[in-house]
Image 1 (cartoon, rainbow, N blue to C red):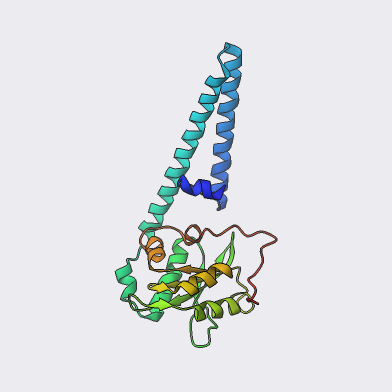
Image 2: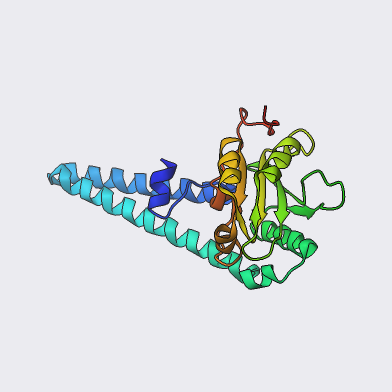
Length: 226
């Protein structure tokens, strides 16, 4: 279901406001559908006409949701936007604060915590719908690669030490093939240069970029890899 929605440029509602809006739209579409069917039966029109009306109502709802998503993205960009050139020119500490500010732009309260002995956590975000997000920032020279060792460290501390539900490594460079494969297998998300561009320049919110699921009773903090 989520994959089909993404192909259409949509996603499931995640915030309270989005859920309320989606519920209102669903009720409106349902009302239209019932009115259309009632009218079709009372006037003797074929059911296909009513079905066509329902399809038109669904198309209108799809268009509205897509416009709402684009409006939200543009609002984020108007609030805060960084280019890759700006990110490349930063030092390590500035890069950490930039990632903190991007999380805040996405509506996720966040703080910079990186320092000596930070145990693989530079930024911590508190997402009410997805839980605690721990971000490890790796600022490199353009063309630099982050290896698997970083992923091991983040996995080993994100849950046990920082009580995180989501672990992310972000770099303005790239990741080795082994690092990406290990991260995918052990639930350590990675944001490389291309993904960082979509986040910082394109205005895609980090939860959407990483396709993070909503927190459920079954989904707790991360555990270290065995």
